[in-house]
Image (cartoon, rainbow, N blue to C red; front, top):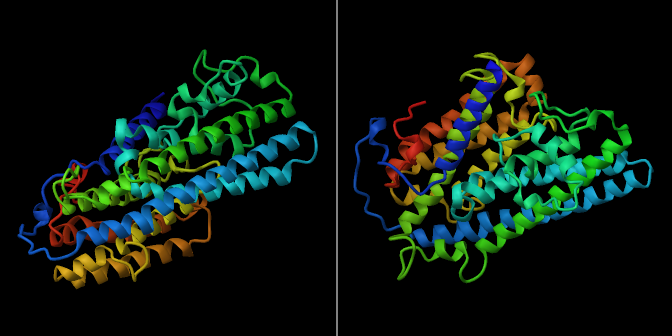
Length: 403
């Protein structure tokens, strides 16, 4: 019971951070970190930065995810067909799992880009696509059975029962028994079904969830594209009838989203599982607090987060208009270069780790702590010199956070 309470508390804390780190609600600039506020004589073309971010980073990422979601849907359909025809389905399962990994990697890029439509209505659209840390394998087990009813509609179900996290469980979990432990929650008769029947039922539900994923991915793309899409709103920030009073305010929206690296990647995905923060195991390394345990994709998620931050920082490639150029224009080439080098070092270190994240937590926790320190080097600069030099505001969730 105690472990369940701790896990729930962790999920609630991280969920509030995920919403907060991308909100447009910001606090004061970085003076609380020991630097004095200053007025910036801003001659930088912030509209060019916003255009680069929208056209070369954010929208292409969402489009790629929509394509990945469709490929995942097709792969699951093939897998279900193989199961139903009682042929060898191992190859089709492997393809479905690989498609999930591809989609998940792309979504982990998008996690760093929670702006506008993904934050509306309490991050409703984001949670439909991926609700971590609000996940429940038991809820998925229940809906595998519930989905057999003709009137089942996944669109009416809570986010913990669908999305990429639910698909990870149904595609990668090799234990066919349900995971429900609380009295009265177990799906009736599930464990008594033959293995092949349970595999088919899980696959059928996976296809329903994949269909829903494709639908929500397309909703996201549609919300950003077109003359009235959020992409145009950002690119026209500060103009007549704009939702933003200035282009800098819109830039601040993007910089807010980049604090995902601090609040979620650094704290929830690294510090908590390795025991720097309290977790389900107290203050010890805890595999069950890793992000993607069933698929063993937790480290890849972290690498994708870092790469997404890097792409946002550069506004695409280094040749594009990015935050690095903004810093140089404002006379802080030192911070631009430091962030560039520190990001490259963090990515290189993460990619050099040869073991799975779960193995690292169990056997080489010092390596996870070292990765945490690499990421912290980047986020410390983000919270201080980056914010101060560009006269941006901190997200409310990071105010006074010196960690």
